[in-house]
Figure 1 (cartoon, rainbow, N blue to C red):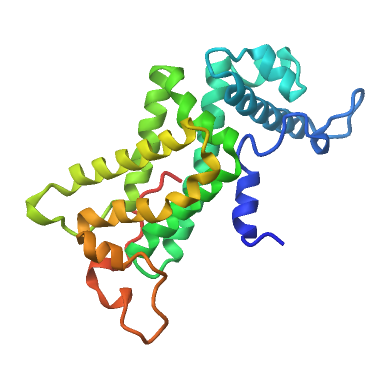
Figure 2 (figure 1 turned 90 degrees about the vertical axis):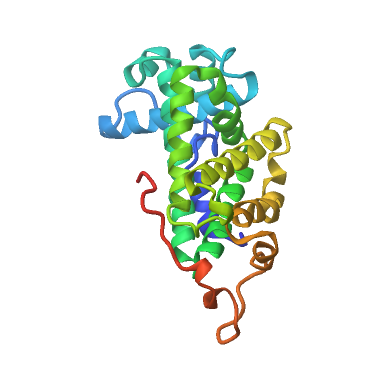
Length: 257
């Protein structure tokens, strides 16, 4: 039995979690009893899955619309009914998949008893989802670079949504501007993900949880206190994270959803 059915269900929503030619989504030729909008939605899902696998295997620059259609089992005319081109389809897959990840992170953050635990659990959700669907991780983290200006804008929007989890962090020591520090932390987390995925070590992403948790908390709490926050929260009635105002429950003000 899967130890985390919620995570598994969310992972299935990521583009690339299934093959484009998944038999469960086949559409029989000839007159169909399925409504046109259902057929179009199914073909769109298959194309997004096909795109993710094709881009992860060949790279964005070398992936062609024909390759994507072949992987999805969908014709070129249908592709161009749904997308204006390869870039449009790539950005649609990226937005959909990162939206799934951010929603799961926000849910984990909101369910945590305090800010420190919330950051850790949000990171856990992100790392686990990306590890389960390595093709999406490659497409979304690595190949977004190859898309050009539109890809860079998309990545910046994603990082802005990630910054929302640090909306009301404790004031950093030494008079350092909180926003500048948050930008550095978010950029560092992304760079760490990039190196792991680019090194074809996506399955190892969950192993990064302790170091990324420490990296996110230390600038605001200090290294020693941040390290103390890494173990699971203490049982009810035992002094622990809930007694420290530096970890007050703060929900992200805007996750973009």
